Length: 430
Ligand SMILES: Cc1cc2nc3c(=O)[nH]c(=O)nc-3n(C[C@H](O)[C@H](O)[C@H](O)COP(=O)(O)O)c2cc1C
Image 1 (spheres, helix red, strand yellow):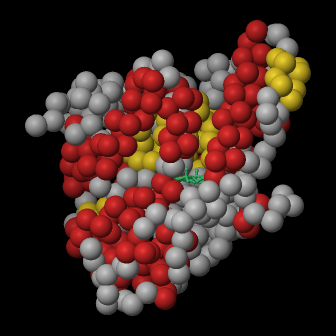
Image 2 (image 1 turned 90 degrees about the horizontal axis):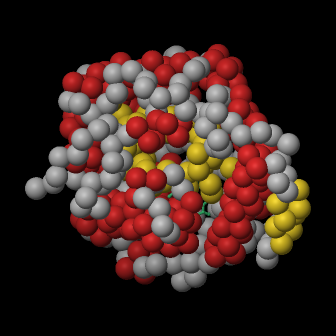
Image 3 (image 1 turned 45 degrees about the vertical axis):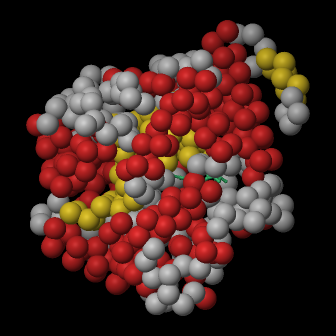
């Protein structure tokens, strides 16, 4: 029996530009330039705000994506996109992903705090270390640094950024002489309405979770099953406590891939049509880059060989996300499907992120179940096509959650940090 929590869930939207499925661009609601159209992005912000959602989020990497497994290979830089949307909205939180491997802490601290000012205190930074050699080559490197080196840099990078944000408040220079960064000085940007941007983290390896426990106020996670999500939830809350923080200081927001319809059949038909309209090899390519093995070489009507599921020989050099890989392998081990069955089932169960195909009422049931089970503080929802999927969330899902006492009727707070703090407390069981 789970203890019934009081308070509301957190609802984010991981915009993924046009939607999480590669065929999203074919929607009749979109033009060929929607992804660079200011009006498209204003509509995303305003629709999310109409639903009193907490935050819109942009995952990102500083590289042209591979359309074989990236549904949105071309995209604008997130802080610029959300800078524009901030001017068209008043309450919705705005989270941009930025790499600690391919940025400079002073420049990023200044850019994020400036944007936080102009958004009225609604900015958040999703901390990632970036995966894949393609991004590295854009910065003159043959490959990304080893995973632990990336996270050692991330840890020091974040400390420098936070010290610089402190200097904005104290007016005192910082003198940082660390292993990776040396700087003396202070920011020229004053503190924002919420003081400083909210810190989020995405990355499920041990060092990723360690960083989350120490500094993150939000964790964008990949959890395919409720029991693994509960495990992850309790781990990060424990890590926060271990760093002298309240478990309420960090909110856990797994991603959820969505295809919604007015009936389950309609939702399934929409999901199938979008998958069928996309590249046939997309699911195989996504799986291959997630587990670090060319899945097209596997026997379709056989289960996954153990050597494919076993942990990467060297996690330091594994090019994907350990967080995604672990969630996929746990999902496969649960039902031991053939490769063909797995690729088919991922249409509804998701791969990397959990999937959901159904009605807004059924989605509210799912959210309520995971929330009261202590598996989440909210979800980072990822519609198959944003152009219409986001409106269903704002206009149909939110009213259902409100009737159940699970969501705000109107904004009571006006900063992103305020939205997070207004959400339900961590259950005692966590
Ligand atoms: C839910 C989730 C979302 C992620 N989003 C991004 C992203 O937008 N950009 C990025 O470069 N890495 C992203 N990552 C990967 C990591 O943040 C990071 O890049 C790192 O290199 C690999 O993370 P991990 O091995 O700790 O999972 C994501 C990972 C997870 C689990």
